[in-house]
Structures are given as C-alpha cells and as structure tokens.
Image (tube, rainbow, N blue to C red; front, side, top):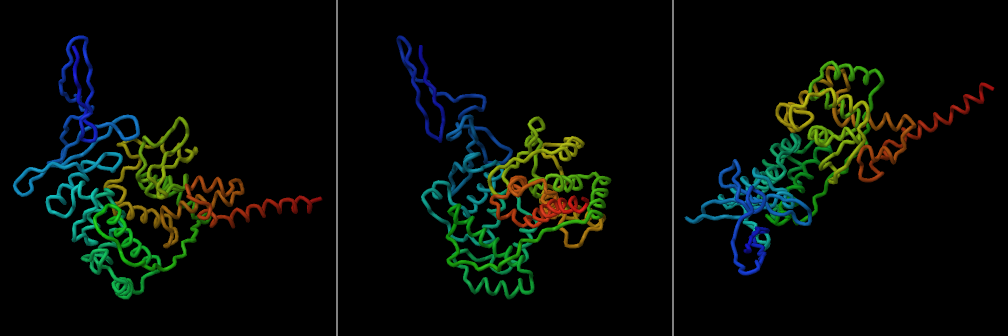
Length: 395
C-alpha cells in the first residue's frame, strides 16, 4: 500500500508519489509538529507563519503571512522569509498595519515594481525603524530635530537642492560640519532605503555633504587611565563593564551592547561579532582581561550586557557620561569610541603589534582606516632604535 505526501515549499505543493506493489493512491497531508507546512500562530493578531526548507542551505526557516479585511473580503498575503528577507513576527505585524492603511504595496506588487504614492520622509522613517528594529538615539534626534520639521512631508523624488540649501541655512546654521554631514547622510540613507525596498523613487540630485575630519584619535594619560579603571571597577554596573570591554577589546559600542553569550566562544577563545559596522560578521580573540571580565558577570539573559531599556536607550548615554565625569576625563572624550581609540593607541605605541594585526583586531575593512595610528607605531620603532644608541653610549 502506498501513500502520497504533499510538502509545502514556496507556497507550491511538491508532489511525490510512492507506488505500492498492487495499488497506488494519493493522500494529501501536512508534515506535522511545525516542521513543514503547518500554519502556526504568533502573538500578533493576523500574523502566522509556516516552516519551509531554507533556500540553498540546510534546515528550515519561517515564512510569515498576514491576514486582514479589505473591501469586505478577507485577504491573506505572504510578507517575507525569516532569513532571506530578515522577517520577524513584529515586522510582519507592522507590514500588516501598513497594508490595512494602504501605505504599503503587497509583496506581489513589490516584485512587479509597483509603487504607492505618498512615501514621505516621515513614513519612510517609520518603515526604516520598523525594518531595523531600533535606531540610535543620535539618529532619532537628527530626524525629529532637523529632518521632520523641514523636509519630513516631502517624498524623496520631490526633494530639491533648494530644500537642502534652506535646511543648511536654517536649522543647521552654526552647527558643526560633523552634525551637518550626519543629518544629510540620514536623509540620503532614508531615500536609499525607499528605493531599495521599492517603495518610492529616489532623490534626483546628489546631496553635497561637507568634508569632515574624522582622524581624531582620543588618548588618555596614564593618570587618567588609572583613574578611569578605578571608577569602572568599583562601580561594577552593566555600563561600567561595557566600557571596560571597549578598553580591553577595542570593540565598537553597539557591538558590545548587542553581544550575546552565544557569540562568546570560551573554548576556542574568540568573540564573534554579528552584523558589525562593516556589514560582514567578524571574530576577534578573547584576551585574558576580557575573559576574566565576562566570567565575573552573571548571565541574566541572552545578552551579555543587559541595560534596563535596551542598547539604544538614553540611559546608556547618561550612565556612560556619569562614569566619565566621575573619572574626571576631558569633556570631549567619548566614553565608548574614545576607549576604542585608547585600545588601538596603546597597542600601536607598544611596538609589539604591527598595523596589519591592529587592523584585524579593530575589524577595519581596509588598512587606510588604521593608518591614523601609524605615527604611534613609528615612534615605538624610533624608541627601539634609540636603545642601540644608549648601549653604544655606555661602552
């Protein structure tokens, strides 16, 4: 006796027939237990998923669907895959709301290149933040302070060079080149996001941004570094430990605050950095100081450093600045990024680490970014060479 099993893959039935010795017949079934094809509810109304085989890889992934009423009839739509589209139940729920409000095309319309009018910078911001899950406090401030009041109600395709000129001469007048650059870069990023996701047309001209000198290398004196270590060690809080991690490893702030215990390989001695600034996952050695710090922490959840309101909250900035003030560091010293510079500067000036190794430790994409520390390496080489002069002078 044979049977027929239907597996659901990409919403299309894959038919496989097994013929018995006498009679072959078909029986359509789902593969049970949530393994393949079964409709599984989420905690969000109107959102469910099915498990399917991953594209080009082993294992399964979720395909999310939404249901809602439109013109008196029930609509069911696929919104994306777990890995291919970076889709989650929360993002699917946000898409469902936008579909109900008519602010977003269906996945089929997106694939056909159709667009819905009205994707202003304000609506693009909402979609951008929903897609990312969260954004930095700095970007929030830039959007609501400078972008929303000026060009927020414009679509990217309607933006003009005059709008940018007025923005510079108005709200951004007297601001630093760094601030102007960051605001204009966010405008470009939102427009590019809209184009990439087929929501709208892009900006019709190139936004000229001011040149910014990013070659600032923050350092601390020996006394300042000792004072900071004393403050952070005695405090022992999440942010204090996160700052120590920045000093011990040179990791970026968000890489530290998003670090999960699963990404720390104590056995092999490596830290896996997921979704870093450069875009490609990296790994760096787990040195003895970082290992001791991590071993001293209690595991309260999947994240290593569990702040009260998440990594992007204002409390992170406030606490870091409090610790900086307690250690009597310079006013312009950046608590996290400055410690990354201190890490790099100490290694470069030691004369024991070449720039290639330093580049890999800092996960710089190219050696140009690491060149700012070259002068420290040169000084260490000069000092090493001068040892010979001292030896000869003693003969």
